Length: 56
Image 1 (tube, rainbow, N blue to C red):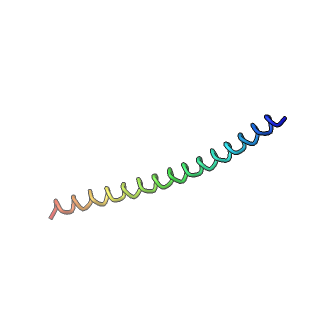
Image 2: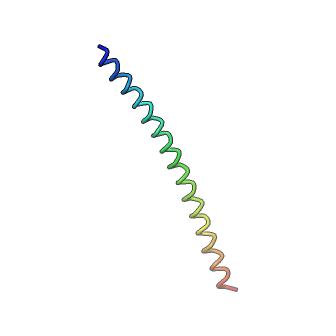
Image 3: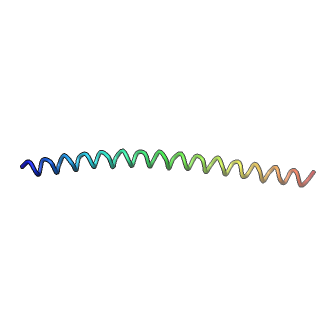
């Protein structure tokens, strides 16, 4: 009974750790997506400025 209880406690601890890890990973993914969107906006702006500069 003690072994089963210890195993259950360990599984619950590991499950909690995995949920925390998943939360951190999702937050990192969201941040990466935001950075990618910002870089895309900067790229479009740079392309626009390059076209304007060519026309001058």
